[in-house]
Figure 1 (spheres, rainbow, N blue to C red):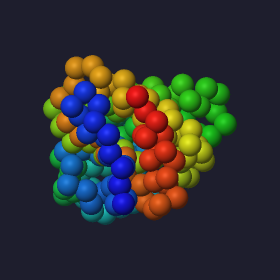
Figure 2: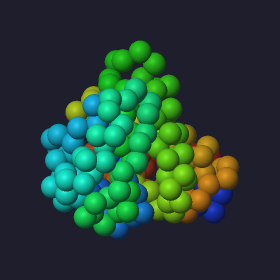
Figure 3: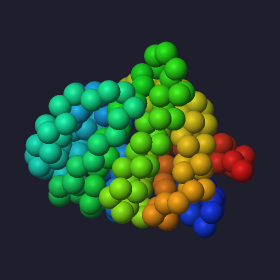
Figure 4: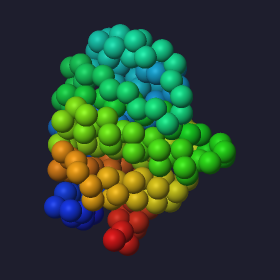
Length: 176
């Protein structure tokens, strides 16, 4: 089950998959400001990608909300992991900060020459941003980015289950 839409001859697609196992040029990880690969997908990145990724992250130290930094993909299929530090639910200006971090992740992808990029539903897990808010903000930022000059050819929103997919499918259908 998936949904897709063309924007400026670029493909935006909603898929159900494990983002750390996808065969894409890069994927985005919703990181904590200290850039430590801890639990959940952070642990999967660390285990599957190897210690090189965390070693590369040490050079950045702690970063501000809205920042996106890139490491290699280590032993993962993806060449790069873009570590994007987004807001937590009910933080001041959650939507504005989510838009900024999504834009910064897209800019990092372009800087690395990425053509296929996968995003998780940004902030919707542990950080508690409602899925409908994540979908609305992310897809608008992606649409705006793809409407301009970009190397990206395909942007995937990678959901873990149908519950995560539905709000993104709904917003994508109405996106103009």
